[in-house]
Length: 88
Image (tube, rainbow, N blue to C red):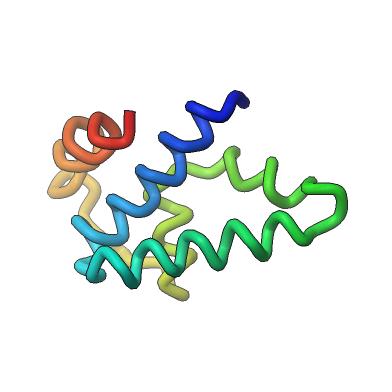
C-alpha cells in the first residue's frame, strides 16, 4: 500500500470517529496517532500492515473501545459517500 492510500485510510478512520461516533477532531486525531504508534512498535511493522485489512469504520469502532451496533442502512450513505470521499 502506498503512502497516499495509507493517508486516505487513516483519514477515513478519523472521519468515522468525528462524524459517526461524535468525537471532537483533536480527540479523534490523538486516538488515530496513538494507535498508529502502537502498531508501528509491533513486530517488524506486521501489525501496522494488518490494520489495513479492516474497514475504516470497524477500526474506528475498535479505537473507541467498543463495537457499536449502528444501523448500517442509516450510516451507509454517510460512510460511503461523505467519509470515504473526504478521505481521498
